[in-house]
Image (cartoon, rainbow, N blue to C red; front, side):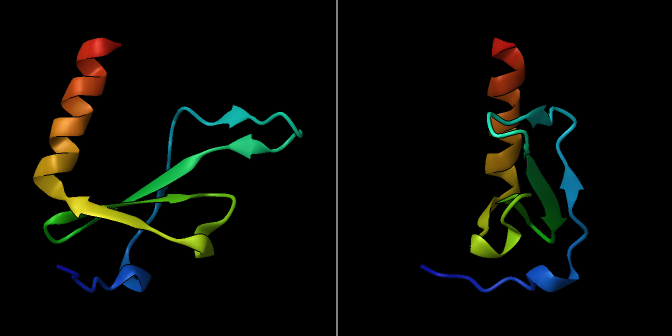
Length: 69
């Protein structure tokens, strides 16, 4: 099943955990929140693709990450 999302209209937010990369650049992801979904992309290469997941699955992912931190 494929769903089209209007990614152009989203407001992207950089991770607060941005780090320096091995080549002097930065390693970072950006997230954006749409109606019922969360989108994730590489901030260095935003045009290479976006991973969009249902909002409930994104919340579950964050809960696991926070519990293991």
